Image 1 (cartoon, each protein chain N blue to C red):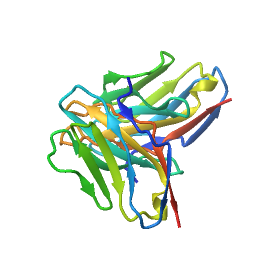
Image 2: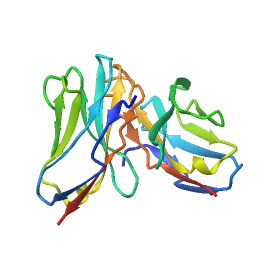
Image 3: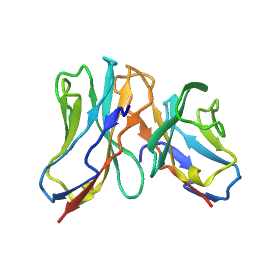
Image 4: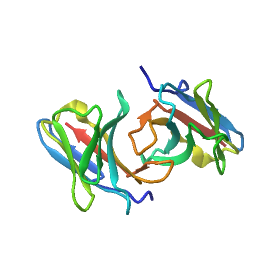
Length: 114
Length: 115
């Protein structure tokens, strides 16, 4: 158990819909990252938050948005869903201090868009 | 350009033998970190081992060791004494810069351990 929690574990929805994925980082971790894993694109970085503020953006679609709340949990909002958005969405967290800054991943949310 | 290249899509290894998973990387940043993660069929991503660009010695963690060849920009993972539970997808990843920055992942290598 990495200490990072994600809900829900599975989500099935229809095209055009909107969903929210939730992540709680490990205790003490201030950085939260979102990654998307799909068969055609592999593992891609979407966005990073640090202590409530957006820190870095990757290949995140405009239909997607995220935020990190004062209690450090984060939500990834996906709207106007398309079939191609079906993927495994991971949240990861890491310590700001230290040397390695290894990221610990949650179990993922498997999104299926039908 | 691909930052991380894993050229072996799949490998078979006999139980109790060692296996080497290849990883090459591309960066112009002198400060970077290299990571290996394991993804079993259940889907979670498990951190295995880390190597910093300034580390003089190769990293080791139990049965995992990282063969770091900086001049060749390679960071191969060696799993010794393979176990059936090692069957999984393995990802090489890189963080550029010295801080809590994003990871860039390779395509992964599937390892199947045979009894």
